[in-house]
Length: 438
Image (tube, rainbow, N blue to C red; front, side, top):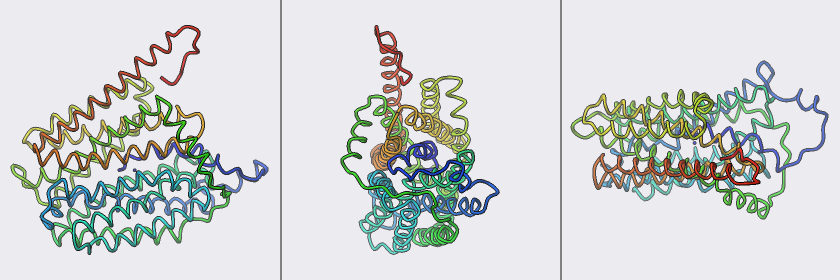
């Protein structure tokens, strides 16, 4: 999940334990054994999952701030170099659902450990990639491995942490995602400026190794996990039911389109800022990702926006903010570009939070799979946005990337308008129970 995975991640929790029935135990006994602040193991668990979150998103987006340098090194276009990001996010998107199923059989802790070990090991080879093709292939393997973390971490928390402490525990993991995504980009930018992009990727790999070691020694063993059997037919039936639901399909499309905008903008912005009229050094370009902190704020306020404006009203505000940021970023003034990035980031995170939280409200059963499908759509949007945004930049400059972003925003508006009309028609339909899902 960029730091933006907050909304979808929390949704996995509610249902992740449903597919593996646990032995009946006295409620008081089970609850007394769960983790909460002040109890042994809670702090260790928090540090472990924070470290896992940092490693995950530092590795996942490690090449994004380095794309101009990668292009120069291999003589590649922006579109070709962007595959070093898109391959990782695309592989993660394709593997989230099967990884979530495997964690039901083999355990959350085991799946997270295996994912980190494979991703970190690959990360140590990435700086030595002899060609762009090898770099893209290694990044795809890394993204597939990392899929096991978001698929397992939330389920582990739901099983091991007391309900009243769950939000705080999830918040620490999400904070790790955000810090990892931001710090990885900033770290690579400054190191690449001094020693080149290979050294920058090596530094991210070493950071991930340190985080993996912390995770291994700090994560408490699972006490409440009960293995379940892998049932592909039941999984396919649940997934098919979610994909047949019109509202869920709209929410998946909205998440993918929002991430298309975000992926396009942040994949290409480095190319724009290192060129005239800005001509910024690589380290400063990497520091632009501090704007991600705005997303933390806008995600946190999304709930209040929905309470005041309704879900569709909050989405309209999010897309309007994103569109305004895209248009403002067209100006050849650094201050205008920075303000535009702030608006794009705020709008994206708010829209993502609204869409992802609506998935849990909509899915009445199989919420774990519903949320995994949202994450798949979300990261496929990131992959498509990164590649298409770079192609648009190569063809028409920054204006081409902005045009792609505006087209995706228009898609969100169209889907939301269609949903509004469908909900209105359902409410007005005779002898039909009023739906709360429109």
